Length: 165
Image (tube, rainbow, N blue to C red; front, side):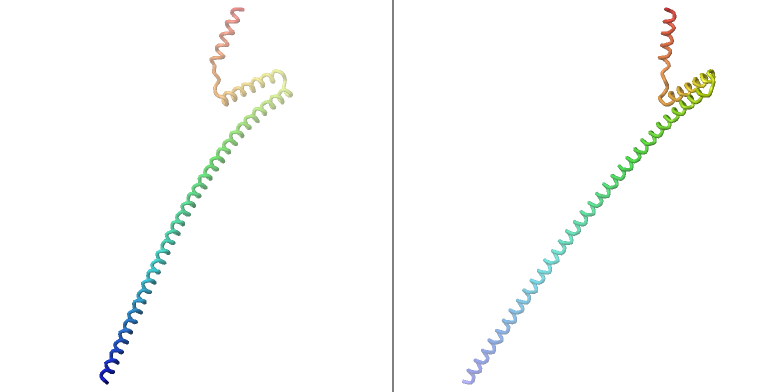
């Protein structure tokens, strides 16, 4: 009888041991699974982070490109403005030149009138002739050389008319 009890006890012990082992195994498995899950999660997180970083980089690049474009546009605008300013300056200069010419003419006329008032008839005539000559010279200089052929033709025509008369 005692043997039987002993046997039973042994069996029980064995069973208990087995159960314990099983439990341990299960626990280990669970732990492993958890670890795996954690690893997976970490990996996923890392991937997400990487993706985010990539996106951020892309955005930054895009922003940089946009900024560059804007800068280029600004530069172009500045250049255009400068060109416009230059053109305006040129126009102003031209206008000033024209004004100066006009002023000169006016001065000449004024001088002529003054001379008329002060001088005698003969001197006045000479002065007028001189001024007229200067005016002609100015005119020729500014508006290009006049064609002499016309005058020649007129002269010849005049001669012909005289002959006919």
